[in-house]
Image (cartoon, rainbow, N blue to C red; front, side, top):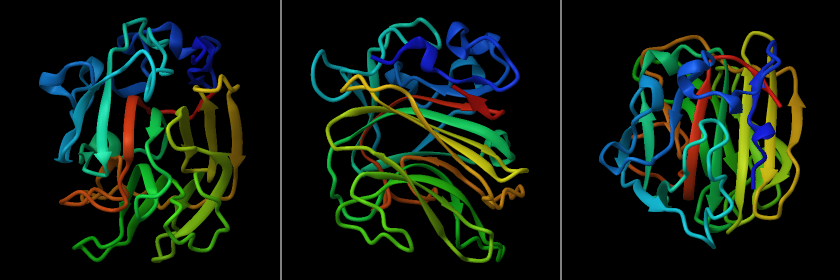
Length: 268
């Protein structure tokens, strides 16, 4: 199970976010628990509501199997964790065009994930802001957090199957993959986090194997260009590379839970 101390905290603070609810933590701007099936994309505390593209359904967390190692209760809120989001076989994803997310330059993304296959066509994407063909002529590729598929090309990086990677672009049509060395195997539960400082070009990846009881691991990256200038066409996507008007092969194959976005760079 995920230790409460492994939820991330503001770099300048001494108290873990896990000790607070969303309403008492100014850093958290969106928290998606997927507990209320009547409004599955709603955020705790009034953050932007996510819209679905394709089909994302509620998944009841079992005692054993997929998602059974997701923390219950949730360290960040103390609430029971009964459900997650089921993306199926890349059948759907979440999107938001809210300025809250569109204007992020320094932020942290966190999620609990479970991948149900190593294959599935193109790479598996956890989250992104990646619009490469904007109608205004701008190259709005910003960042994407993905997992290498066994049946996808690796681009310019020698990634192994299941390897977590960060996709970035300097805004000139170039896509740069950086392998993180952490492997997300099929049919296991994981915690992942991505913290970005768009001003300094620094990023930190957080990773924990929940199924096997692994410790929290981190990897720091420097010298990245994230192309984070605000643009009204940008879409924040969860479970896909780019927002898209339909489910795509660059989606997520499996389950996600407890997705949190903070407006600062957090640390373990």
